[in-house]
Amino acid sequence: MSTQPEETFQILDEPGVGIFVLNRDMQVTWVNAYAREILSANEDELLGSDICQVLDTHLMPLVDEEEETGKLLAAVGAGDEVPCLDLRVQDGQGEARRYVYSSRRLNREPFAGMWVLRIRDVTGRKTSERLLSANRQLHILNQIMGVSASSLSLDELLEASLSKTLDLIGFDIGLTCLLNPERTLALTRYHHAVPAEFLARNRAIKVHHWPWNFVFIAGQPRYLELCSEPGTIERDILASLGVATLACIPILAESVVVGALFLGSRERDRLQDEERRLLESIGNEIGSGVLRSMLHKRLEAAHRETNLYLDIMTHDIKNAGNVASLYCDLLLDMLEGDAATYAKKLKESVRKSTGILQNVSTIRRIHQEPPELAPVHLGHVIRAGLDRTPDTSVSFEGASAEVWADDLLPEIFTNLIGNAVQFGGPEVGITIRVEDSPEEDQMVVVSVEDTGPGIPDGMKEAVFDRFNRGYGEGLGLYIVGMLVTRYGGRVWVEDRLRGRPDEGASFRFTLREVVRTGTDETA
Image (cartoon, rainbow, N blue to C red; front, side):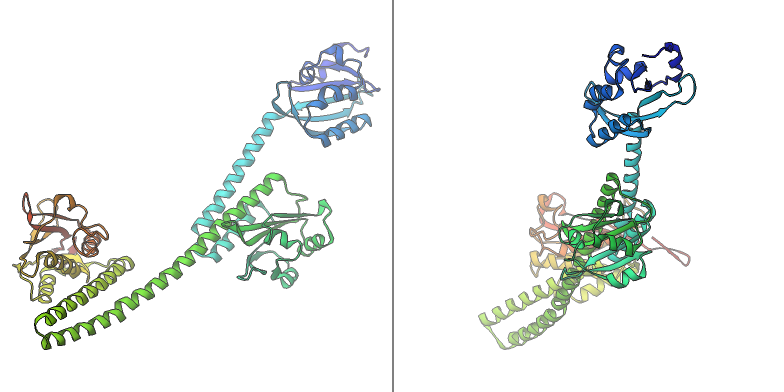
């Protein structure tokens, strides 16, 4: 026990810090209240006791890290100063705490020859540091995700993600590799600050060789660190790159390895767990971007293949249909009776097939070609369409309005007139009217009315849906709806005679009118 009065030691006291004062024999001479609280011990249990026994009895059972516990006891037992030792502890209530332990010898009177041990609770500070680290990781991942989402091509993705990762995390060198189709070699796609000698020897990495097989075959991250005493091969890799640490992160697309990201640091001795987790998350995000790029390429290939099929349908099959139609005309001139009737039905079937191909071609143009609208004389378009259907009875008094449209506008009238004839028969009456819209300025309303069987009220809203089979051939009215929308209008169907759905239908749609003021044209 010390002969010093207790007030003498109180000048060493610090708020929130457990303080032990030891004599030359490493026995506890004085202990503050906070230290007693940490150890859950009273003053009588501690004073005069050997500090190693005190720590072994009261503190060590609470410490999680066995290795750090050994370091602490060894240092105290040897009388060595400990500048800082981080301990993870479960307190008396079972809650996780973080303590920093330090010890030093006192050289000034009245404490010369004594030791002071400090145990500081840094739980709150460690939590804040973890939050800051988590926020930083989220920021970095968001940056990489932004690069991944905005990259249109695989090359753009690999180059931008490597550059962004190096900038954000502070590595010195980096390179990305992708597997060849045979999955035997990893080919370097982009690199930064990698020694030329290394690139010359490793432009193509054999993925089955150690340690690359760990990354490319097993799909596991691999970390090479000089401080971990790596094997000869790993040490040679680090030396050839001129780094102390190398992270080898697999790039996965749908759980399949497609490449790897390599990042090296000259200054870091080892990578912390949170850094490793961050790098693996970056590898996963780059893998997601690679997958998107691969799917985009597949989509482009499928699109090209689809266009090939459509070209065959709209060109070769259409030509074959035209030839078949000509032969039908010859047969109709030669045949009589039932045979002539069959030839006529055959020609009608060929006409329907040709119409379907025309509809497919029109839909393709609508989707592929952006609208380039220009003033179109509505009356001229309608007249030209009527000239192509001389056998159909259509009443049209003319129209002087110009509307904003393109060369697909005639398809609207072709499909509406064709539907009327299909359901109303060759004797159906059709009337086309063009009027100013009573509800919307600078809009005209076009009506195509027929005396056919009409459309039930329950089907009126669905007739413009894709592949609707209740009225029309499925695509014609769908095309009408698409084109009207393309021109900035709207389309609907009503009864020709209000409240009499069985007395014919009235298809109505609006188009934007060209309004001329002097030499200007406005919509």
